[in-house]
Image 1 (tube, rainbow, N blue to C red):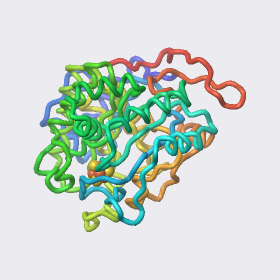
Image 2: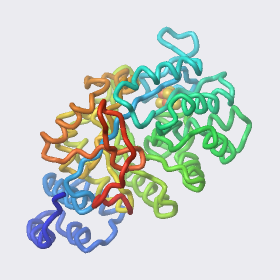
Image 3: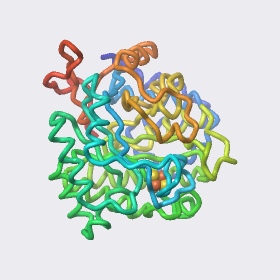
Image 4: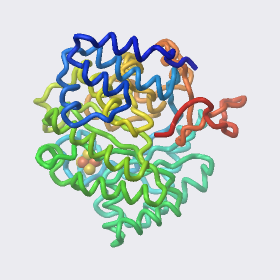
Length: 393
Ligand code: SF4
């Protein structure tokens, strides 16, 4: 794995003489934590390539030339949801055309359809179904674990956990305990959006607050359930809202170390009530990834979600701070409902070529960032740790 040579820091410091990022570059090179004001300055900087260079320096210091991905499959048990977020093009109301709900056995069957490449992780998220009982959620996890005992279940966002606890008339801590016992191994990071209330009032008025999202993540981490975090950008938020969001995540990570990584999510306005807003630019997509890498000094991974920003930009993002392209996915529907034009999944071979073409070295990981070694027929065989690759904070 190629790591920056010892004098890379000196060369980097010299490169920032005269740049508006000079003082921040000094802080980064000396390991000093960046402030709120630094975050705003990074978003406003005219030195876009300098920003990328700094983020790349931090990314390579942590992970060398490795670019992580996993072979996962998305499962969306239902798109019925009562919440009615303005940001969402995917959810349907009961009896609305296009709505669906999968019984537990149908969901298990659906999971089996994407199993041809021996996925190592099911990524399970859905709408907040208005009438499903608590037992649906525990039953689904048990049925999946029974049929696919070796597959990691990354299930239910903080928003869903809040709802599942509500329908079960339980404290969220008790619901998390039950779901863990039923097979939930970790949680996806969706629903964080932007924590600031003023923004949530526009994009997701009925969703849990940012404070509640963080409280549930804290509880997951306390119970040993690791989670991802997300930030949805490119709608009505300000630069300050983004920096506030990232720093609130950093603060919780200081306390728990329970976040695996951040996935910045580019807002796709098509087919939503916010369709008058423009889509994000490539420049903003890369800037958000780079700033996230620099501010989140305690997050092991910053990911580039190729489904949303496209494969070409995702390749560039691997040099702007991102170290992980998320996964092969298989059958993404949520971002595609909002106009994404990318494929809804990719094979492992295609994924590896994409990474190699970018100049990085593919590293197939499982959900816990252990290297996946494939035997004949592409089945995963017992994993080995990832030598030389830092996944700690
Ligand atoms: S974003 Fe989630 S909570 Fe909001 S309407 Fe869509 S599915 Fe429901």
